[in-house]
Length: 575
Image 1 (cartoon, rainbow, N blue to C red):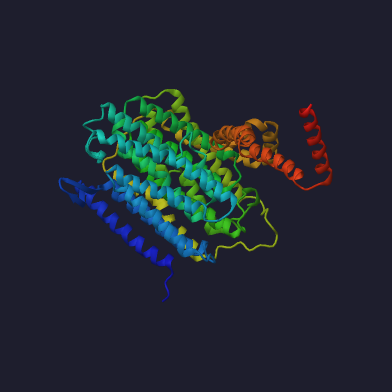
Image 2: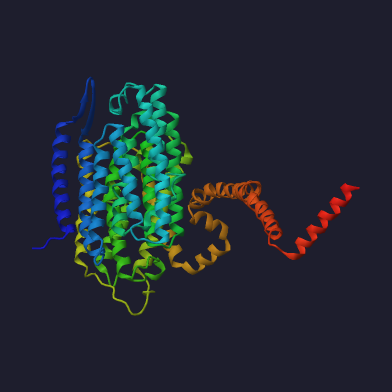
């Protein structure tokens, strides 16, 4: 049988994923941690050692990353069908997964940087995979935004020399109050908020949608954007109960709110889902800053399951609609693609935190812990309004895809018959339904009892129902909503463009320097310097050589004139 690279990669990654999951069960039941040191080079008394940390957290995360990436690669067999460079695409995806693996098991800042930079480089290659101007611009903003975090990580590596080793895991508890460790914490937070696209580095995440949809499914669920959250889960000891934790909490809540509002104004299917990823990353960051790393980790895993499924379903819809991503063209496609839309709506409901789906277990627990914590009312409002906004844009998406009549071209073929894509989606469907309860049993073997007043206990459900109603009304009266948007154009533009962040990240930074460069080049290099330098010298010599050439051209008039001049001079001096 002729096996394609997609099928071989699928079997290989799936088998490793199941093995790692079995190891995770063994580690969590026996409370095991394995620390491996591999000596690469020994020179006199110096040795270069590669270190790996295997605990239940690393093993479970690796298992999930490999499980999702195996299904995404299988899905790519259908989605990228007809692409001549599919082998190159799959190899890039595998390199991406390998970089993430290295990052997950590293307790050492040097090997973390290898995985971190690997993710950045391969993500650039994948974003510019479709070679056009939009992809190049998106790739450039992705690469340059992530470089800021890479530089912060390099500075943290340099600063770790204060401790004599790069294995941060040894120093977190013992040195957490020292000034050196606080500097490292600030640098690591800066690195994490660039990779996880928090404010003010959010603009690259929707731009990265220029990549093929299978890449988006992988990047936005379990690899690139979760790397920052995972790094801060490892460093969480440093930021609990101090100003850095408070700043991170505010940044996370603002990102969550900004992305939730922006998604309600967006019409691009992939960008809506990208903004929902941004919103969930803000939720993870903020709960992590409050001192609940295991909760952030739990939500990271459940979110990975339903977000990968949501992207795969969106990719299937886009694939069938001739690469059209505008949700205004998608009316009632549930009639033509019932299975795909069924999976998509289950993923959407899981995202909203519908009871007993994957997202409910982590999201509800987070919101109850927020209600139980000692927070001010501004942060509390941010959490619950953002939850309502999530339901709002999810139901807007459901309304546009399920109701009404198809607004697309009349001659088209929309069907559910691409089995490779469906198998990839159905593989994730089971975990998007069951994954949350399964993980909560494994990660929290003893249940936490959270006692709250009735109003606070039902707050999450109340804001979800309110968000559902507002989203439905907004979608139903889309024409009057569009007119309202035109009447309040500046506000709509501000909220819909992520608070002008893409402009601030691009033109705002480059404009001043480009203008300054233009002024310098026009006044110095092409101005005074040119006038008194090469060009001025050239004009001077040219003019004089032309006069000289004219004189020496053996012209009879000049010859006679010069003869007369010589006669006059002789007569004057002889007198």
